[in-house]
Length: 374
Ligand SMILES: *Cc1c(COP(=O)(O)O)cnc(C)c1O
Image (cartoon, rainbow, N blue to C red):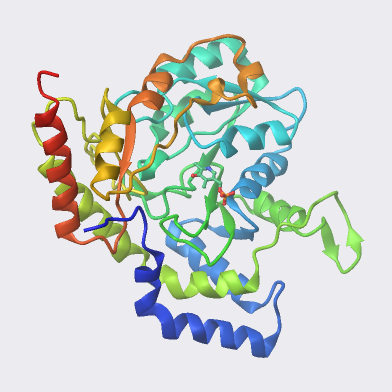
């Protein structure tokens, strides 16, 4: 059996009628920009996240940039980001002219380490104006510790929730934990559009109002431009598709958790393979199911030969990337570097069958026993 890394066709097949109806409705109304589905989706998504406001934007990267702009973060300011995440997290900081301060990760969770943030705050003090934790792979970051440390220097906390739609931290949803949160609806995210899309959530009325201005050329009314904004609107078409998919998100996330539990049981006790840590009371949404192996590259090749698609998120830590190396001032981030060498994402999406999970586990067991002693 060939096992792909994602199967959006299988996700969309049972929704085909709903999605086609959304297309048809839009073609007839022709309200492609800021049509009624945008506001309706924003209300439904805000409610889903347990936040007062949601603001749709063009993609998750823009969401991060606009969050920082809404908080007036720019040149001269520093923003703490994990050293191990998708590039967009640090890219957004650079795009507003601020300086990313890298923080090493907790090796058990791959999320920003509270101890590392504490050290960064001790060093940079109030020049750190925001902290940008990522809920990596769908696991909430250590928000209580991060919020306390940030507030000790008056820094805002911006959640990068691009991989965590629906995750709960101590009972509360991602998107309701920081001052503002950023989501991506890239097609393979837990909630995905038919193209690019993004949103921000916040409980802060002023931040929400500012985001609405910034995403639409700073317009307070037609051709009235109060501030310099940009064009980063969520397409009506994407909003309509997201509205059709949002009611299924909880069931999809539950299926991801069942798949993760099956993997963890199936890989139990295997030498040289470390499954992800349990959630410790938090509700993970397993955007990715990521194991660690010191022989990651050989394992990935072994699985590819068996027709099993896997992926590496991410093969380099941010300070090891040409784009960001200059911001690391030559420092090492050993936990981030080790993760970059060892992480491997196994197929994990709601449409994946139990039999496929078992086959992946069997292939990993075969690799482990074949290489035992070697
Ligand atoms: C996907 C992702 C983004 C960027 O979202 P886009 O919609 O692709 O711009 C940002 N941060 C993280 C952690 C992501 O996974």
